[in-house]
Amino acid sequence: MDAKQLAPIPLIQLCYVRLAVQHGAAAAAFVTDVLGLQRITDDKEQFLFRSDERFHTLCLVEDADGSSIGVEIASADDLDRAADALQRDGFEVREASIEECSRRFVRRALIVRDASGNEIDLVSRPAVSGRRYFPSRDAGVTGLQCVGLRSRAIEDDLKLWTTILGATVSDWVGDIAYLSIDRKHHRIALYPSDRAGLLDVCYGVESLDSIMQNHYFAQERQIKILHGPGREAASGQIFLRFAGPEGHVFSYGHGLADIDARHRARQFAPAASSLCEWGSECSEIPELRQAIT
Image 1 (cartoon, helix red, strand yellow):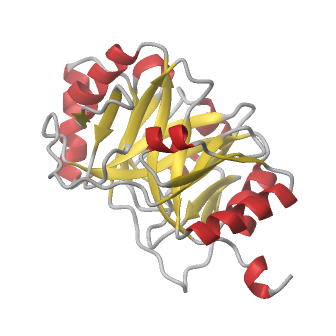
Image 2: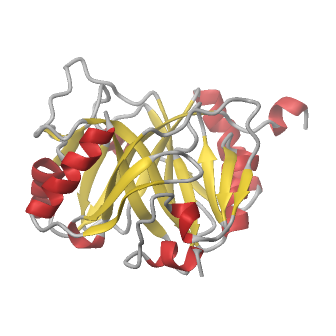
């Protein structure tokens, strides 16, 4: 193989989350009334939501086997390279059908399972919208920011993201790995766990004021705060994690650090102060609790 074939496949952006739910209408009410996203109407999917210029960043899928995330790859040729590399290294991968691509609002997709069993859509040409984003409430949302994935096989999952795909480890907190795919500190975080699945879905907000306003909003409506307000030591991101429908975790984030080619991954101690410089505690999310014990 030549160097071109061995080079990791470049990633462009985190596109969307397809969130598995049992009761779509109730979950949709939470996404609009609490999270503050814009619901859109489309014949292909019943529960679609926007957070920025993209056609959608969240889709609630009833009775799905599990949740998944969509990540854009630069070109169709890179998708072909990704398929070959993933199959060669033993990862489960298949070409999405025309119907599956239509429901994801992309031109082409590979549906991949990492070593833990998490489903990842590698997509080409995701749709953007010609209409201005209009939120359902003034939560200050600026877009889909990052996601946390549970990992039952951290080394093998890292191989998928960094050796085959073009993500890089920006920092470690204990064995938690923060993965960068663009200029931001991370778009994906891998949390060691005994199960697969999404740990949290984070939407960026425009200011610290937005974090605090949303904190008060959640308290007033008796929405359970799981972690924060706080600030991540590694990324500089100010965050608020809170309970969503059916056990899902959502968060708001602001101030996610930019990194450049000179940045080298740092190892932070497995301590509470590494997860939150401000001292907020998290006993409700097992993966965060285990990271500091």
